[in-house]
Image (cartoon, rainbow, N blue to C red; front, top):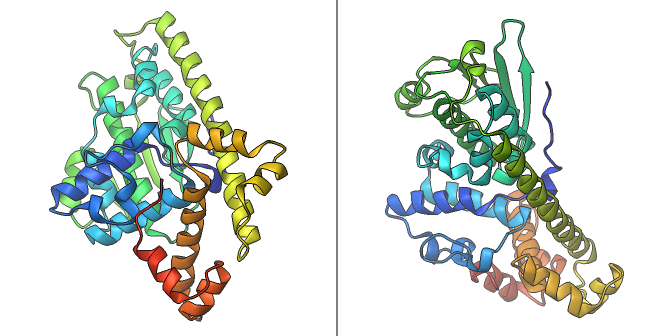
Length: 332
């Protein structure tokens, strides 16, 4: 059974759950992410104010900054190790009520967009009853790709072990990455591990997958899936709106369109659009800041342009305005 429900990468977001644990992992290393301009949108306890959701561009910038602050290419593993089965939230409730581990795995993959993995999964049924889960990321060559795939890999193992009531359902793990601390990763996997492989995968054993779940509840199983689908539908609408506004900002630069004109382009009033952005936990100013910041850093990393040229491209009067952007805290 193939499961490939990931949206285009520009339309997905990393949920606060992953960012929350990343925030605290940085703190555990003696770092203070709250003092960093990119991470300043978070409260001191690592949560976002007013159930805020952040855009794809900001999510990517946050992870890149976290990797830079930590200097750890395996930060994704560390963030995964911090979590438990309960970290799946409502998805965990649906999995816990599933008839078997096989059903639970398919439920988890079906609603993985809620978990913010930003990955594509494929679950292939094998002739011997086993289940091969492979994952891919569209962040080719990016440190974010390694982070996301490592974090998701650990979470799959956590879920599979929890649902199998102490039995180890994992037969083999393959990964293209070679973690610095391979001993810890191998011990965590507790199975055959192939490093430097072409793909990231987890092979689960058929007999364990089909064992009846003593916690199964058909009513709870159906109800939690209805609730999950409602969440998917609601978040999809927000994601499409935020993506469309960010795309319009990118197209209009160096001109910065007023919110009223953006609202008119989407067939709504300025007041209505402002309210919808507030409901999504953001603002037009915050989206403009995110787009400019992401493009400024991309241009500087690519080289070939002076700061004055980058500032002009982003609609600033001079390089000093660009410098203030790079040093500023994220606006509300």
